[in-house]
Image (cartoon, rainbow, N blue to C red):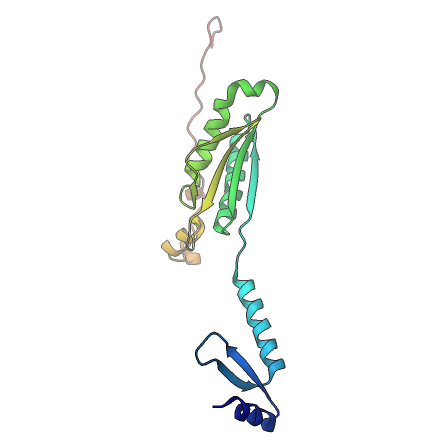
Amino acid sequence: MVTKDALKQAQDQGLDLVEISPNARPPVCRILDFGKFQYEEAKNAKRAKKKQHATQLKEMRFRPKIDEHDINFKTNRLREFLQDGHKVRAFVEFRGREMTHTEFGYRILERVKESLADVGLPEPSVRMEGRHMSLIINPKRGPVKSKDEEHHHAEPKKSESSIPAPADVIPPVAPATTVASEGMSA
């Protein structure tokens, strides 16, 4: 269609002649409401931006003298970050004389690496940066199931009648053994 004819047809309909694809040969044009077209383009751009997920680097600090429960708690927190698609950095901070025993920090980070292997891809080596020993773990691609979800799908729901008696729930306790030390009689 000739440009003059297209402009006349657009004016007759009370709409605009909009060039959709200027690089095509011949250029592609449409007769439409330009304000509505701009609104739809902005809406599509917002929708595309919303679907993009910017990964953040989440950090977790450990100490060389950290307790077992604290390691487990912080490792579970790192697991949640990885399942949300974030990159994580676990680091051990050394103070004072702790710098002489960096092997404690290395053991902690190796343990974190092993426990998060199912949800993350750790970088090959642990790095020492000043007083910090760090390890970066990237999330695995694709949906990652948590251990709770795996157990939830594997086990069928139990009915109320199959609830175990309290004696079945409490594990048996091993009898305590006493050791008599030298010089003391029992």
